[in-house]
Amino acid sequence: MAFDYKQELTRIPHQPGVYRYFDEEGTVIYVGKAKDLRNRVSSYFQNSRDHDRKTKRLVSYIRKIEFTIVPTEFDALLLENSLIKQYQPRFNILLRDDKMYPFICITNERFPRVITMRRVDRKLGTFFGPYANVKAMHSLLEMFGQLYPIRTCSYALTQPNIDNRKFKVCLEYHIGRCKGPCEGLETEEAYNRKIEQIKQILKGNLQIPRQFLQEQMSEAAQRLDFEEAQEWKEKLELFENFQSRSTVVNPNIGNVDVCTIVSDETTAFLNFMRVVNGFISQTHTFEVKKKLDETDEDIMTMWAWELRTQYGSEAKEIITNLPLSLELKGLTNTVPQIGDKRKLMEVSLKNVLFFRKEKSDRKVAEDTAGNPKMRVLMTLKNDLQLKTIPRHIECFDNSNIQGTNPVSAMVCFMDGLASKKDYRHFIPKTVEGPNDFATMKEVVGRRYARLLEEGLSLPDLIIVDGGKGQLSAACEALKELKLYGQVPIVGIAKRLEEIYFPEDPIPLYIDKRSESLKLIQRLRDEAHRFGITHHRDRRSKAFLVSELEEIEGIGKITAAKLLKYFKTMKAVREASFEEIEKVMGKDKAQKIRSYFETAKA
Image 1: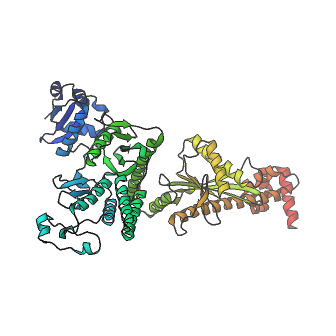
Image 2 (image 1 turned 180 degrees about the horizontal axis):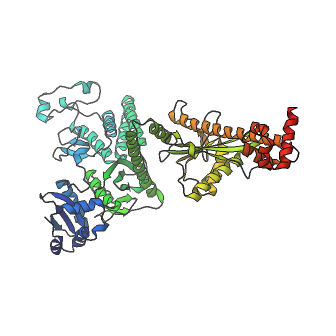
Image 3 (image 1 turned 60 degrees about the horizontal axis):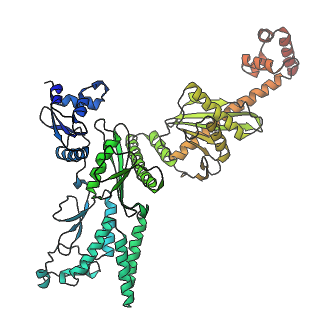
C-alpha cells in the first residue's frame, strides 16, 4: 500500500521535536530529531534522486509517522537518545547499553565492598565507569587492594552480628589484605576513611588521596613508629607510580571532556576522554556503523552526550575536533587551534587514527590470511610503517664498470611478483663520468616526470639501491617534481642490509629472516641483474663497433648501422660482398670485405 506522505506533512508543525517512522507491521524503524520537524521530515520525501541508497531504502519502508514537540533542540536530543535505546530502530546508529562494559561499584553496605558489575543498579551502591579497558580496571582494583586493606567477603557486618562474634577472620586478614572488621578489629570510621580515598581516586581527584597518605606517614614518624611510617611511605610510592602512569595534560585546564571523530563512507571512529584535574582519567575509542546520511557533527554530538551520561561527567567544557551540531545545555564547546587544549585534542585524535588503522590492518590480515603474497606485503607495510599496502613497488640501481657505458635499471613488482613488461633501462644524458648520486637523481626524475606526463599511477613504494647518498639524490628528484612526501621512498645499503628513510640518519634493521626484507632484497637483486645484463650488452656492442671503426673509411655511425642489419659480428664477417653492398654501397663493401679477408690471411 502506497504511503500518502503529503497528507501526513500537513499535520506536522514547524517546531523542534522528535519524529518516528514505522513500517507496515507497526515497528519503529527510525527515530530522528529536528529543529524544524516539517522541514526535516519532508526532506526525506522530496528530491529523492539526491538521496543515497540507504535513505531510499528507509523511505520505501515508511508507512506511518509520529512526532513529539519539545521546547528546544537540546530537549530533542535527550528524547531521541532515550527513544533509540527503547526501540533500537534498525536504521539508527544504536547507542550502547551500559551493561556492555563493566563498572566499579562501591556498595551501600556497612563496611562497603569494592566490586565490579556490568548492570547498573543505583540501589546497590555508587557506580564508577564504564571501563572499556577491562585490564586497566583490574589494575586499578589491584592497586586499591595494596593501598587500602578492605574486605572482599559478603558477610552482613551489622553491629549485632559483630558483637555476637558470628564471623571469624579469614586468610585475607592473616596476609594483611584486610583489617578484620568482621571481628570488630577495625572501626567503621577508619574503614570509611579508606573508602573515601578510593572514591576520590575513581573520581580522578588524586590530590586528596596523596595528602591522606602523606599525613599518615608523618603521623607515624612523629610517634616514632618508623615501621608503620615505612609502610605508608611504600604505599605513597605505589600511588605516585600509578599517578605517573596517568597522562598529565595541564592542571590549569581543570575538568574537561574531549571527543574527536574521523569517518569514511560507512563507518565513524570516535574517541572520548575524561580529563580530571589535569589527568586523563578515562578514555574510550570505538567505531559506529553509519546507517543513513548522518554528518560527523551529528554523530559526535549524539555520542558525546551519551558518553558524558555513561561516565557521569560533570565537566563544563568539551573539546572537539569539529563543532557540535547543537548547543548542549550547561556545556561549552571548544575547537582549539593552539595551546594545551589543542594538544589534548590531538592526543584524542591520535587514538582515533590508531584505532582506525588497527581495524583496517586486522581486516586486511583476515582477507589475506590464505594469500602468502599479500601476507608478505602486509608485513612489509608494517615493518616500514607505510600507510597503504605496497602492491606496486619500483626499485632503481646504477651499473657502470670503471666509468664506462653507465646504465641505470628500474624493476617493477606488482603484488609481490616481478612485472617484467614494466622494467625500464635508462642511459644517463646529463651526467658525465661515474657520478652515482647525480645519475640516481636524473633517472628517478625522468621516470616519474614521464608517469606524471602520461597520467599513469605512481608506485606505492620506491626503493633505491644504496645508502643515504643515493636516497638523498632520489629525494631531490621527487622534490623538484613536487612528489616528495606523496610516495614512500627508502634506500637499502648492501653492507648490513640496513634500510634508510629520508631525513633520518638512523637506519632500520629488519630481521634477516623477515619475509619483507627478503622481498626488498629480491627487488634489489633483480634491479642489479637487469642493469648488469644491459650494461654487458652495451659494452659488447661498444667493443664490436670499435673493431669495425678500425676499417679505413668506416665510422661509428656506419659500424652501428652494419651491426644493426646483420645482428652479430660473425654474420658481418661471413657476409658476401653483394650482401654488404646492399647496406653500405659498393665502395664501403669492398673495404669491409678486404679487411676481413686480410685478417683471415
